[in-house]
Length: 276
Image (cartoon, rainbow, N blue to C red; front, side, top):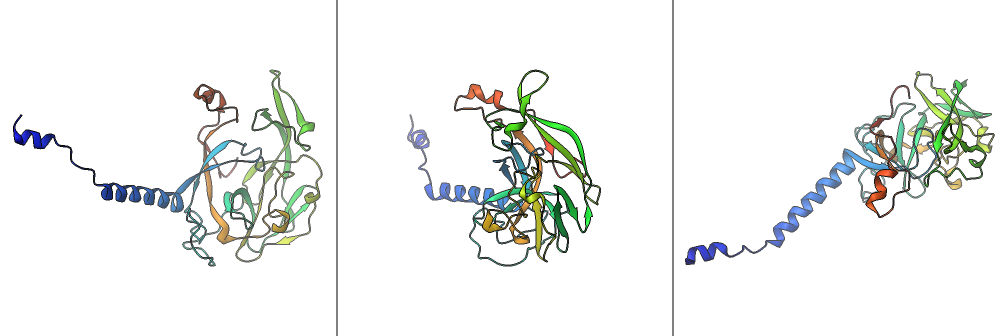
């Protein structure tokens, strides 16, 4: 072997400074997309049943409502009022927001905008002094799974079977239609304390949100000291839920063979449509 060939065969030393810089740029790009374009979201609770199931995976777009000090994925900005390129959500939007108590991500439906009067009367939503139409539809049947055992004190009375003999949660369901014509499904499991509230006027710079599972949702009907959202400042808006990418029923384990069986038939389901 010639000296030239031997020199060529010598491995070039790794430039660790360059590699670290490239990794830094990659992390920066991911954080930028996550903070300002879109991010994934996992549904951890049943507060948005029947629209969203525990285990649904979503894509949330960050730009429709603009940006606030809470928009970056890393909470490093000081508190400041307002939103950059901000716009209010539409009534009926499914939005991801930051809890005022601990800044955790929550997901709820936008019901009231600044100046709106929101009230619950015997389980029916009233908006600006008028009842929002609420019509009984077919029960929602959710298969019993690790993500939905239907054994809570509220849900247990609705546990049963379907026509194939499978264990299901059979939940009373209603279609609610906002004045804009936008409609969606809600659950009403019985009379609960927050089924009756005084009229609540949404202040400027705030929004009013509720879960579709009206009897199992800590939302704007509850003050933050009660674990709810209260009138939520617009700065706490994170983004708009766009679509479900896929859903898992909670039965998967570390074993890859269990993963296909845990997948539900919920693929690329669009959210925030005019009529659900």
